[in-house]
Length: 101
Image (tube, rainbow, N blue to C red; front, side):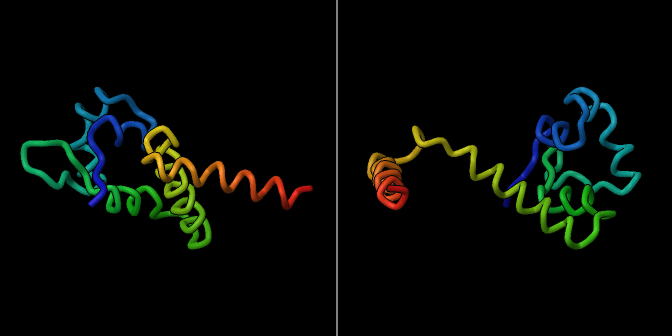
């Protein structure tokens, strides 16, 4: 399960980590899902995203979900991939260059 800590939640709602730490109970009273772990401020990302997106149209919800998925995928930089997967990038580049010529 993908989770959000205080800093990650703060980034999602455009507030500081300290602000979230001091105001999370008010957010929960206003409808935000409560933390999923007792004693730790950890939230279910799926629940938080559903809460954040609650007023969006269905089409926009799909777009936002795709954007979030792409952002998560982009966090894996090629330097983090095993060597055999790095080679695929070079192979793909060569194939694309052949198509373009």
